[in-house]
Image 1 (cartoon, rainbow, N blue to C red):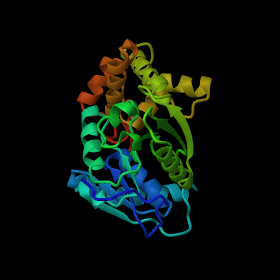
Image 2 (cartoon, helix red, strand yellow; image 1 turned 45 degrees about the vertical axis):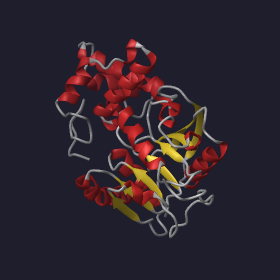
Image 3 (tube, one colour; image 1 turned 135 degrees about the vertical axis):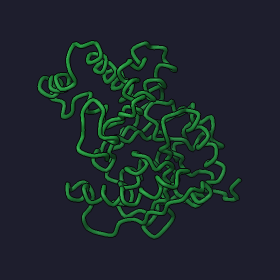
Length: 296
């Protein structure tokens, strides 16, 4: 167990203590891009060395795009990005953000491991899209340090974020997390705990329902999305949104919601399961409900 007594209260300076991001998948890399784009240092942790090896290129690509779009500061130095396979390397982190796969057992294992090495009072943030924060907090050494922060994908382009206060979340942890998010240019909207919180409690049922319409032959994917864009003013239709999230992640989130609510509307439809089994996860694999020019 860590020998620290308390976590530093100040947010890190560019040359100071880093922010740790656990998981170098789509969301972990996106979060690292957002943070380094605002000049703060990041330690990115993953057990997959190949994925870690690809992360610096992916972060650099995201930084270029976000700056061209005016979504990240164009002036100033980027924060440093350090990659590692060792959880112990986040011991000095000011804030830890967990962004591993949306499987409760995996998240619980990672949270238990990292909470052993970080200083008491260090906010431990989960980027879960649907698992109740208090459920995850049960795996932490100090449940009061757990906060939820549901980043949208990609986080460096979407400034609103759902921040979840668990029943045991300490006020200091919540304050420090929202202060960081404000520094990152985010609009932190604090909500209560529960399966799916606000966004996914509503969104995942909609994505599942849209996929079921295609499955049942009511309409093709293009027509479903065209109706949502044209009639409801949505920027992106539900099935293109599902492709952006990743159909594998959609299925994982639906299972989390079904297991915790018993609501049959969250049972993944057969078409979603078939696409995931075939490896057609959406934009990140080049094919989902739609086809894309290349793997992102």
